[in-house]
Length: 397
Ligand code: ADP
Image: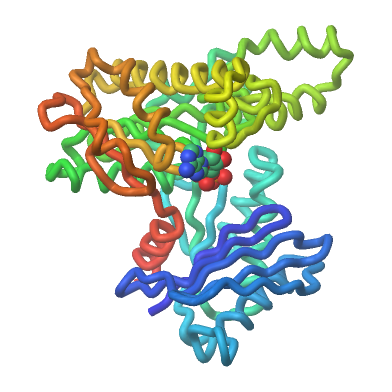
C-alpha cells in the first residue's frame, strides 16, 4: 500500500510517495512557482533529481504533473493510480474543531474553510490541494492531518490570552500552537529511546527550523507550546519576531508611519535572527560564519535565539513540574552543534551535561547528554511526511 503525502503552500506543493509497509520513500519532490510559471523537481528512491519546467496555472496541473512523474516509464515508481491507496494532506489550522486527523468529507472541508481567517496564507492552499487530488483521484480516500491537532489537549489556563473573554467566545481568539505533527513524532520517539511508556514521560521538544517552537509533552499529550493563535508567537525565528511587547506595534506605527499591514510584515518577514543580525541572514550557517568573522549583529542574534529557547524550556519545566528529556529537531535543532551546546549550558540546574563528542554530529539520532545527566538530551531528526503517512494509514484501515 502506498500513501501520497501532500503539503500545499500558496505557490508550492511538496510531495512524497511512501510505502506504508516498509515506510520507504518511493519518490519525492516539489512543485514551485505555481500560478506564475511552474517548476517540478522529482526524485525517485535511489535515483537522480530531475528538474522540469511545466505550465502550472493552478495546483490541479501541479498535481497532474506529479502523478505523471510517479507513473513515468523511465523515472516512475508506480504503474497506475490504483497503487495509491490514500492521500495524506498536511492542513495547517484545524481551529478547535479538529483534535486528531480525519477522513476528508464535504463537512470536513467546510470546517477547514471556516478556519481560513486563522491561517489565511495556508488553509486556502491546503483546501485547493485537497480538491485538486479529489478531481484527479476520485474514490481515493483523503486524510487531513492538522498542525494544530496535537495541541488541542492544552489546558485552558495555557491556551487563553489575557484579553477580553468576548474575543474568545466570538472569534475563538486563543493559543493553538503548530508543528504538532513534528512534536508528536519526536516526543513518541523520545519515549522509545528512554525505554519508557509514552504515558509516563515528560518531554520538552525544541523544533528549531526557520519557523521554531517548543512544546511541553506530559504523559503523551501536549500541555503547552510556544506558538499561539498564529505561528508568530514564541521563539525568535528565522524572520519572525516571536514574543514582543504588543505596545511596540503602536510605537512603530507612530514613529515610522506604518500601517497594520506594514507592522505585521515587519514582524513576520523582517525580524527574527535576520532582523536582529542587521539583515545578515535568516540561515544559521551564514550567521555563524558572520559571527566568527567578528559581526556583532550576527553574534547578538544567535545569543538572543539561544537564550529564548532556554527560557521557554525553563518555563515548561515549571508547567510540567519536572522533565525527563529534552529533544532537539528540525533544520537548526538537528544540525547546529553550537546552538545545542549553548542552550544546554543554561540547563545545568536540570543536571544536564553535554557529551561534546556525541553532540558533534549533524542530522543523526543520538543522546547528546552524558550518561550520568539526570535529564537526558536527544537529537531526534523529525519526519513530518512519515508521520502524516502513518496517521493516514491509521485512519483508512
Ligand atoms: P522550515 O521547515 O521551517 O523551513 P527547516 O527545519 O528545514 O525549516 O530548517 C531550515 C533552517 O535550518 C535553515 O534556515 C538553517 O538556518 C538551518 N540549518 C540547516 N542546515 C544547517 C546546518 N548544517 N547548520 C546550521 N543550521 C542549519
